[in-house]
Image (tube, rainbow, N blue to C red; front, side):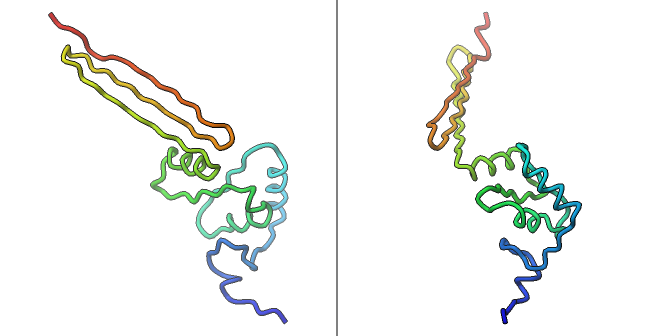
Length: 132
């Protein structure tokens, strides 16, 4: 006889819980979406079985999970996504104020992508000018 512990059935876990109940409508629709070439976003209120649904139908190595909080921004979500797939984004900003009253601003971004290398972009501009 197999021993099943309470924490394998109830509670929050990163592992598949044994209490998962298939909901035919939900599971069929989820599998249909998973078979498409689209991304799937599973969202909803706490303790509704979102993680269990994904764990039941998607292999761990094929899923990117981002646990969102009310204070997260779109930037936070994209940063988490990129970090999980191994892409690093570095940004820089340089501001120089010249003696002639001109402020030069330079902003740059670098994306480091495994197996592909890196891509850089830079934007420069001057603000101000001479007054007579």
